[in-house]
Length: 256
Image (cartoon, rainbow, N blue to C red):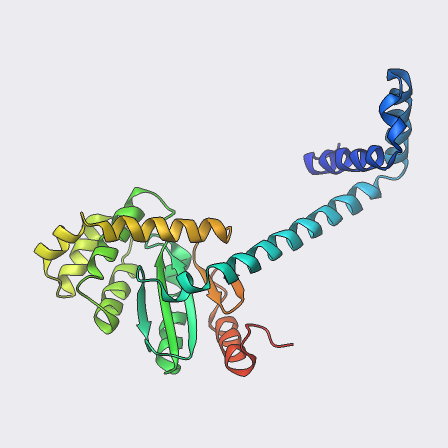
C-alpha cells in the first residue's frame, strides 16, 4: 500500500517526465498520453525505490529553499531582531554577544529550558539576551504576553527578569490573572500597568513579533536566534553555549 508521500513523489516524478518531453508532447492524442502514463506506471512499479529517492530529493530541495529563505530573512530583519524598541533585554544590555529567544509563557519546553538560560546569563557577563513574546498557545498566552509587554514601560533589566522568571515558573496554565499577580509581587505600579495594557505598545509589540516569526517561518517555542542561525526547541545548555562561544570566536554560530 503506497503512502500519501509516495503518491506525491510519484506525481512529482511523472510531472518531471512530462516536463522533459519536447514541445510537441502537448499535441499527443489522449490514447498516446494514456500509453505514456502506462509506461511510467509500469516503470515505477518495477522500480519502486525511485519513489523513495524522488521524495528524499524533494525534501532536500525544500530544506535548502527554506534555509536560504531564513538566511535572507535573518539578514533583512537583523535590526528588529536585536535592537527593536518593542522587546525586553536582560543580561548585559551592552553585551558583545546576543541571544534572541521567542517564547510563550505557557510553553512547557520554554519552562524546561529556563534553567539553561539562567545559567548562561549568570556565567557569561558579556551576554545580551533579547526576549520576544510569541504567544502561540491560546488566549491565556496572549493575555500573559500583553501584561508582560505593558510591564516593560516601568520595569527593565533585573526587575523585569525577576518578573519573567516568576511568571514562566508558574505551574499550570498561565493567563492574565497569573501575569498580574506576578507583576504585583514584583513591585509593579498596578494602576499604571492597567492603564498601559490599553496602550499602543502592546499591539505594536505583538504585531512586530508575529511578522518576524512569519518571515522566519517560526511556528513553535522556544526558538532562539544566534547570529546567522535559527535554533528550534529546547536544545539544552551545551548546544546554546557552543553557538555563543562560536560567535565570540568567528562571529558565526558555526565556525568553519
